[in-house]
Image 1 (cartoon, chains in turn blue, red):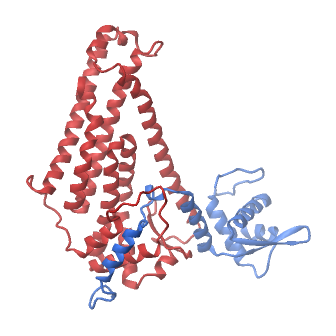
Image 2 (cartoon, rainbow over the protein chains, first blue to last red):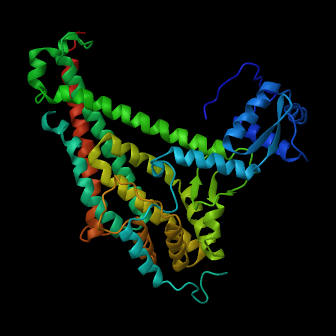
Image 3 (cartoon, rainbow over the protein chains, first blue to last red):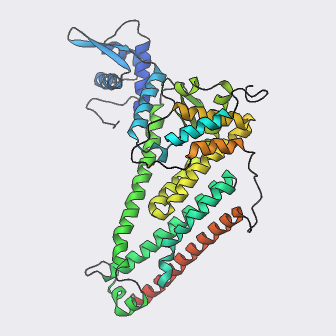
Length: 138
Length: 309
């Protein structure tokens, strides 16, 4: 995700991050009862966002699979597919997939297992009873 | 300066036995801190000495920007080993600096992107993402967060989830990402330090495991959570990795949790294996630091004497 400043992409009174804007647009779209045009989204967003900015954000959300669009006359109408958490998950996926060596940066709970590790691990877990009485649960 | 300028470049070789001993015998918290500090000191000294060799090497090149006095025959005679080593040091230092800058930049980029990915979610210490893929990460930042996928939570029982969260919170409160960044940069500064990177990556996880075991009050619950999570997220191993016969980090962590808790606090005596690791690491780092200081001071004195004032 490269931040591109597009012509007509005027920042609102308070400069909002790209991710925050995407979440807001998605939130507005989720409040719609039916597929809505861009102007409807722009109107409810407030904050003096330019029409082109809203289109850019919607297109970006569409590329991520968070919104769907269908043709209505000469333009598109838009519907939300994912919710805010779903959008965050899609974005996180992208970050994780882009890093081949993500262990170098983000400490993961577990790392990949070799076939030998898997066999060892299954043997070890066989020794840990699933529900040891008086332990763990609660 | 003589041979002392080369010592810090090869002293990191001592890191290998030290890393092995420390990760097996010391409390993971002590091991992480000790090995990170040693890696940092050795890496800084090694890079400093590389820089000294570069100065010596550059002074020999025709048309170099350094003062003319620095390439006088007297200076050359005072600085031995400058024939090949000096010139070889130039690309080596460039490679080290570029590699470290690249690693640091990528580290910052991933952190930034991960934080941006979560923008728009309600603020809170935990972000649960609706993703069937099982994963869990500790995401340090202005607001520390634990990111966990619904797929991961679905595969764990309530107590195991608590163990998972306790583990990730331990990473955040212990600022483990700083240790990891230091050893990753150190391993790029001197390839001989790679065993320390592997060791600290492991001991930091063990540290979080031990903290989680205390927080949930059951070592077995943590062991089960790790085991289940690992079996769930069985990612295909990349083909570039050789199939080691030795057990990987996950089974070793589970096995360690089935044993009694490691003793904390006291620093081991010099006559045990753990003591050997601690004192070996301390000695290696000290010798390395003294050698590079010796070389730096000597070179500084020589060059100052050679510089026309």
